[in-house]
Image 1 (cartoon, rainbow, N blue to C red):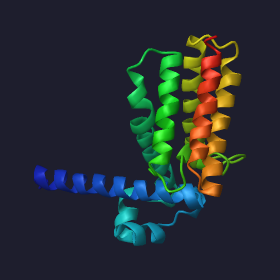
Image 2 (cartoon, helix red, strand yellow):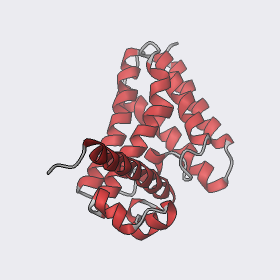
Image 3 (spheres, one colour):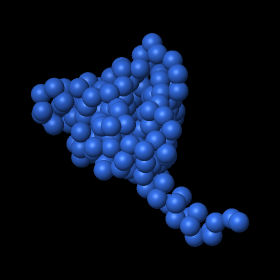
Length: 200
């Protein structure tokens, strides 16, 4: 006999809550300690979800790491990309993306600052689902910058995207290193100057 629909739906809903809670905790931990540092025991202690409950939902530690990247991407979309998306493609949208990146990073969405900046180096020269997830997230961001830079009239969208990404990554690094949030403002200002220079 099949179980009542409401029982199945209730279990699914609880599983979804567990999935997001654990993925969010894993993503936060990754910005400070690295994705490789994530453990089921550590997440159980942080979230209050039992080890068996976590493994029932995810199955493996690798699946948790991949889910952490997916949750970080969702938050990046929410904080940085979506607020700028209704603006015209090109310089106007780029400026909004940069401004919202500064807001997102200053807001301590992740304790280690920008997830993309914090995790990109860790998975260099690696293969596998986690490394591919990190690479896709970084590539997606660079592709977005390049597309809008091209519309904005950049003579070398890939080079300018590299420069903008470099400013933001260094701003995040210096903020984490020195605890001075003005480093984020500096990174945003330099990135905006690059965008505005392309208008001249």
